[in-house]
Image (cartoon, rainbow, N blue to C red; front, side, top):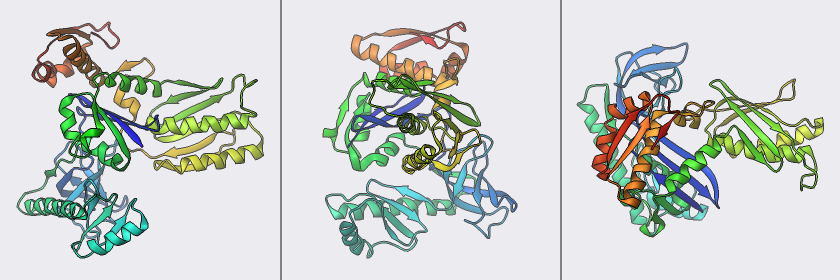
Length: 435
């Protein structure tokens, strides 16, 4: 079963997911840098590139989106169509779009263009009984994927009908609106993290009482707790995950993450007297830790892992072990195997921004980005207000952080939300902040 800690804010939202006491996911949503994933647009085709097999779409944002021509083979320049953003901008690439619109609900997903009722987690017998009932109501080109079953089957029908109405409203609206136009902003952080874990949630801890009512729309109130101090726990785990060196037993892992690739070095320690018999055992333990960290850090691109040198037959055993671990990570693209120098090479698909880029301006100088600094300051304001009834607070920040605070009216929002006067002093000699 899973336990979630959700901390929302002015500049960033964060969530930790624990399973059996072990952290398995970190979500950070930077509100300042707009994320378009899930949004639905009426788009206009600006250009078609047959060599790349894509069409470029004007969606009214800073960057054009692109869509694969195999999804819309007969499209022409100037055509208008309804699309959903499948993946946000990555580096020099604009957002990736799809014509397959998905509406996620609590127990099912409505898939526009699908004529099936698919199963995603139900017991086979339960799915078959639900299927026989649903097939009578499912409309053409509005198929569903069922992920869970409510207590009352009628609730499933109501959910399907609600999502269908939502789609019909958007489709009808698009008929008289000229592209480019945002038809639906689907960026709802709380809804997203709750629905991703809805079937196995045991407890949700929120840091603000106002968030409790929002979470209660999806899960029973008895599972929700308010704990202001949990925000500090989130920062502790994030900084622990982002450490360059990680220890286990007497061995360690060193991670160097740059834009194009990640290099990981496994170093042995004193294994005498430990329950580790060979370097192969150390490498297997290191592999477990490495793949956990790759997921938590949302690392992507080419990854090189320099394990402790072992015999050739042991190396094949280690590779098979790694493939088993990697099969549980949906973002692993390919394991290429050992290079001539005996280094393991693999690639991990990019899905959203790296945790490093959401937290730091300069990772190696431990320089936090302004958005993250303001989130920490917001939490400190909340603690001072709730625990000590403080009426005012002073924060020393760099010019860059102050400029962001002024641009988004951070002080005004703190005053409005908490009734606390926040004053900034600009000092560029400060590495991050002082409160």
